[in-house]
Image (tube, rainbow, N blue to C red; front, side, top):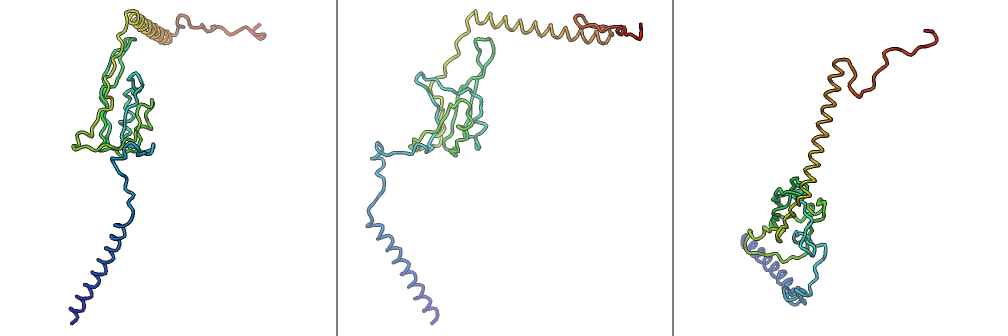
Length: 212
């Protein structure tokens, strides 16, 4: 007898729960819809400017960016979203300089924390609010941000090369002269004689009234 009573009790509870759920569903069914008509409203839909959707390079009108390949953003990223490939190029001064080759960004693993943007010393990157980033394969989420061809460093002119060579020779000569002077001073100190150009100390005390 008890089992029959429990059966009808649970059946009544189930029906009451079903009616309550249907009541909520029916209410929402007749409620006016406020769903955005996307993508029909793509032209008029306004995205907040502070929304972070994708990292991008900042190019000027001439196609130049401000990235100096310092790697600060790559080191600041908490999960390795950014990978930078660099190369060494010759400068007009005749020295080597590190330059950006490829800048890779994995949108699929980005946490949008903006730490990379905060630590960039030249403000070369920023987040835009373009939220339409859906793709069919994960490989397409890895993007090269410097999509424009990297401009080559201008070749140094003969005058610049000659000037750089003269500056190097002058630095080398100055370093050698300094080293020679230090060596002579050490040898003079070891021999107990003043080095050439060093002030000589008085051998005798100045005559005083008592000595007279």
